[in-house]
Image (cartoon, rainbow, N blue to C red; front, side):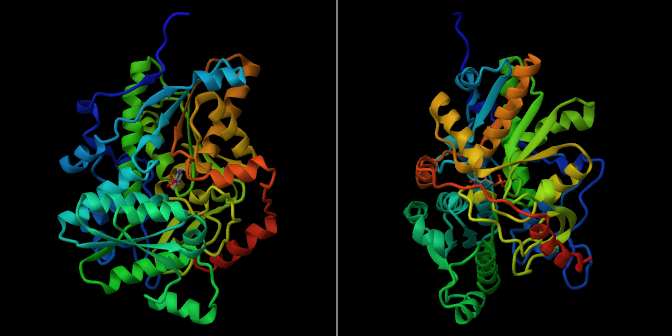
Length: 455
Ligand SMILES: *Cc1c(COP(=O)(O)O)cnc(C)c1O
């Protein structure tokens, strides 16, 4: 057997110096966020009370294609970037496909997922603007862990509201946040009006992301020098994540290939955007034929069964109205193990791109996602995060089609994180306790009727 290359890594001085802002090159720009009361389009200044100013500007920037990565952020990226682009020979063999499968391994970041790519950027800009405290919410804890570490790096205090049930049932990511020095509060808490209100009405409430968001936003609004941060959905988060695809573009070149299909799992859209947008650029500009596939859970199918319309980003209705594919902000997703994919809406850029036919979406059942995760673990030696299993499942489906057609398609997917802190989920799978959740059309229509009135 001739020697073959397993992984492609960029030298540190070739880590990209700019993020790619796809908004500037889209033919149809995303529609603006609207003030929920006046229904007027929001400007960057309107976001300053909650977000750092530079992040507010990036959120709405439709002019600048390339945005320079600050030197301090690039220095921190060097701790774990470039992340490897890996040829999945083991997986190809396990499924017997002629396809060439590659994955970008974001699980090598210190906190185990892609979330750090944006956390470092957000903490940096906050520090630059003289902000001393940042706050956020977290469910299972991937984003909270990333932000806690990023805050420590730039010398800011982090306060994280963690959904109470996760705080109690998933203690390890909470310990990680505390190890990095963050203050972690189970939500709902008595420290905010929103928390007090809900605890008064329901003393045993186990919390939800929607409530935790409301608490974090309230803390940011009522504390001097404190800003709120978010780990997905927003356009500036997608921007920071393009470091993934920009590296992958150079690494695919090292491998002498170009992807026919690019796949990412989909919660709010940030890791999908990260791997896809730099390649989609060649579709927009040169008409290159590449398929972009977002893999969402069948139990939270905003892209495949949701509706494109203005809706709130949170359950309580505190955020601006965003034009997006949504299941309705009151949609309560089933308690699947891929906690990072349990969100009712999709980011505004991705929503516009789906509407315009630049990308497609597939829905993956919980059991199928873990079946795929098992094959990947056994053939490549990495235990994938339950979220990432959705991308793997979609990649395997595409690779299997190649067995029938005999085509050597090049498939690239993003491994958004590892699952070493999610072994309870694998335990459930192995003991046969995992189930699929089905959604009837009526289940879906209920919340859509509700938001129909927002129009
Ligand atoms: C948060 C998370 C996701 C989902 O978020 P996106 O913004 O859609 O990328 C996917 N994978 C992992 C490992 C996560 O932590």
